[in-house]
Amino acid sequence: MRPEGASAQLVLTLDVITPLVDEPRAFGRIAAANALSDVYAMGGRPQVALSFVGAPDALGLEVLRQILEGMSATCQDAAVAIVGGHTIRDSEPKAGLAVVGSVQAGQAWSHTRASAGQRLVLTKALGTGVLAQALRADAIDDMALTAAVESMCTLNARAAELGRVHRVTAATDVTGFGFLGHLGHILDASGVGAVVQTERVPLLPGALAAARAGHLPGGSKRNAAYVEHRLTGPPLETALRLLLADAQTSGGLLLCLSAEDADALVAELGPPAAVLGELTADAGRVELR
Image (tube, rainbow, N blue to C red; front, side, top):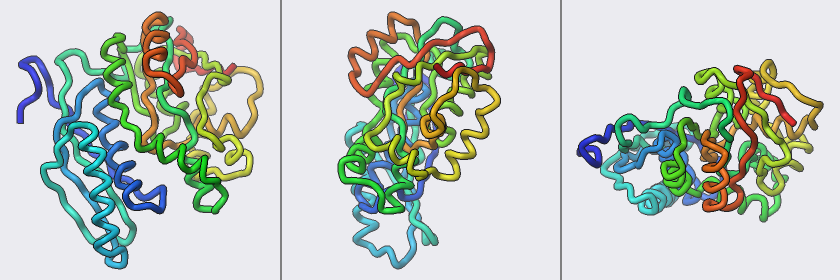
């Protein structure tokens, strides 16, 4: 295949996850959306993919079929062709995609092109990590579970499209390192800092309650320790502080762009997208207000 347009460049990525939910088709959809997000986070357009599934024999062919159906459905929504793949026997179910996409030459979003004065936009609500932990403890209600699954199944395609229109310069998707961890990567690469208005951070229904109840994945706790050195500002509730570092699966995009463009993008994308704060010259520091 060739990239779209003579000046386009290829984008290649791979991501595989283990189940966060019990329903196999939903797991397949989430796994595909999560993998495709890496291309959207670079401002690219995914085009073709190879699927990967690992499964124990006890899982059964019907469950495997449903996982693959879910992956296929999400790729159809993204106009991405699954052109092949591979399955293996594994002790724990796993699913994901190797994705090929394209981005216009010189226009790929990276961590290195953020600048002081730009605004920060987050396009999805936080909390998938704590809610998945609550699900394992059978401590989540149907509304919270439905909202979390819907969020994880939602593609970042529209957010990336609007980001290209509204002149995003730097971006990442919010996944395993949590919001604060991925923000820190942009700050370090670009030599800037950030002020975050914590009351503006969108949270999934039930996420704060789950964090307060102690349903915190080990990865999220490690994330919080990883970013602690860069945080300043007044005291913040411990549960909220941990949610800002919560490890996400198929999270939203974190975008850096001008104030005018940020407001326009959020207005077009709609909730839960929000302008969270701005970038500053205080390199590497995050002030939580």
